[in-house]
Image 1 (tube, rainbow, N blue to C red):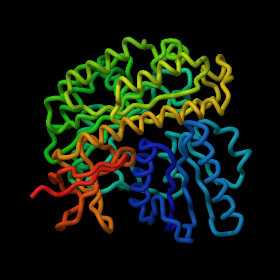
Image 2 (tube, helix red, strand yellow; image 1 turned 30 degrees about the vertical axis):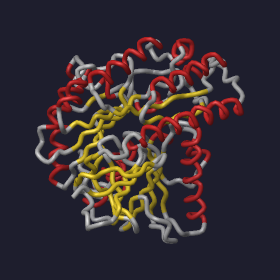
Image 3 (cartoon, one colour; image 1 turned 90 degrees about the vertical axis):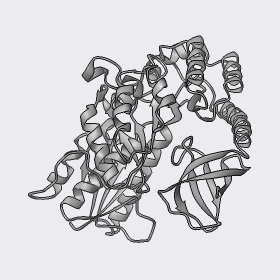
Length: 432
């Protein structure tokens, strides 16, 4: 075995696992292509890192496995290995359904993959990884698992209980990333709000972010996936006063109706949710909030949906995504709350709320015309340099297209003036 393809599906947390696996293969002298382009060539061994979160993601994972199974039947692939959330969740069923797969690993035991494949492997299990992101930007996973057990979510069933990494271990990884040229860190976990409770006995996100910010070479720190209930309010002055911490917070709210929130088992009320948003914006002026909402959850009536629409209009989230409820096996909702809302109704609600948000986002984009922002350049396209502000997370948020007037270097930071706004992009010129 000298060549391996790794195909990563799902979220950034999966991506980090795959990057670690690439490093382990490299340590053993094996050439790896991570998410290779469709060149018509496939390596003899293929590792598929699956997602098992929602129906569409599971379908994509299954289809990807079947595509490589077809290649194997034609002799184009020698070995297929599957790991990740889907195989963790359906470990007993999948080997029966797809016998073409040679080995199955879950969410955590994939660390044995190298030693199982390579005799006398040199691999050691740690945070070292080969980045697949631009060299100046990296995801930093600070915890695994979740203790929240929301009614609709299967993640705790897949990943287990919440488990924080130590501050010291995380800072050590940050130092290693900075040594490679990383300056932007996107902090990820299933539940940032709970960081540290399991090992320090108290919420410790503010302490962690402060320690990360002390590492020379760190420029931007961006926070993803906070949980609204039991929110760690001491992170807000850190966001406000620490110049390395982006005024950006990804916090999934899911809904605003007390009826739906109770059915979802979110442990927070509508009034508490509104108070949380007000306090974040009051304590961190200029903060950009990204949230995710769900429509069509069991028990969501027309009045509940109208309340959600009013909430979106009033809050004017800078960034917002939404999805329609899809029943997940073995969750509280699947066992106790019949999914009786018609799929067409769910889709209509989803389309309506996203049209509302598109108008809001466009208005917020237009408010930036004439203003000056610091941006990091991600790449060069034919007509523009593609960059992001501190308010823009990679892959999910708007980009800044800088008109070419001189040569810019990806990974460097520049001051630009916004001259035009589009719904999902800003056009900018370099400040001289």
